[in-house]
Image 1 (cartoon, rainbow, N blue to C red):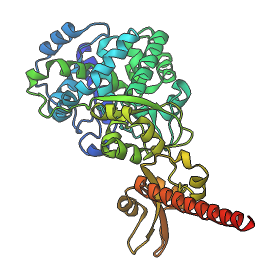
Image 2: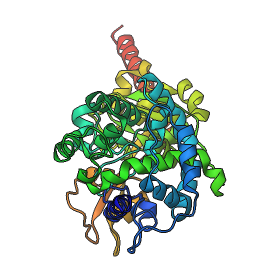
Image 3: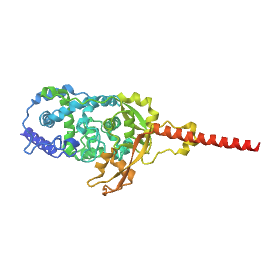
Image 4: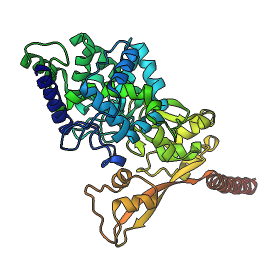
Length: 439
């Protein structure tokens, strides 16, 4: 009788925790399908489909440093990922090879258990730009104040380093190591990663000072009660998915890349045009860069370039970077007088920024105009000092584009040089005539 009461109590707790998970991330492309990784329909948990003994034995074999406890709650999550969320599990298998080598590199560096690489699947679904309904972002779901205050990440309208896989992974490893040092238990460290150390300590006090996750289970926030079981279930599924008829079909392929460090203003449109690849590729490689340009106060921002174009970039780095550093909000025409004064120092200019205008038509808005002009909304607003979000019909907007200028400048230069030489010859002839008359 006592065992059946305990069993029913566990069922009740698991049902409550499943139905109240609020911290699950919501990728923009999947709002409906993955509203929560742990939510069940009303009416209680389903009957088990997978043999409990099979899962229990396999978890024992998988267990390394972090305990992989088997109970009714972890079993239910295994069935969720095996059946109701099989498509989610499949996507994780298709994407894991892009991120796992990076995770493993930093887990080794910080002396952490290898199985922690599965935690990011629960945190973000391996979505670089995942944002939770509470504002946590990136692969490892850092809150903005934690990212800035504890790990010195830049989080603003131009750059969000929570979306930089390498930067976020290293910060996550540092944080997990710190949490394990605080609690001395991996399950409590994982719970603290989800809800914060203060909430875990509060739960420990409320549950009589227990220092075990399952001992404070009932005193934890609802989403945290589901967090550790999800981690255990996902660890199981990543290793035994074949036995549940889940296999990857469309592998996500990473783009090989090399990196440069950039400080100061940089126009990414110009960088990609002159290097020979698309802005979309640059955005895919650099999810942490939110705008089409780096601001003037950028400092040591890592910019990833496709490896296939990196050799060309390095060979032409000076020309490309000089052109991309031109702030297109400022006209950059060279005056003819400057060319006359410094005839021997004519710049080798291959591109210059030329000003164009666009007249706003009926039905236009900032987004549609920016797409037509192939610039970002932020850059369009900055160039035209637009503070709001509305345009008026007939409004004249300015924008700049690169134009080939080597030939134009060479003609201007040669023409000026020619006229100057003719004037000097005429003046010399006049002087010689005057001298001859005096004689």
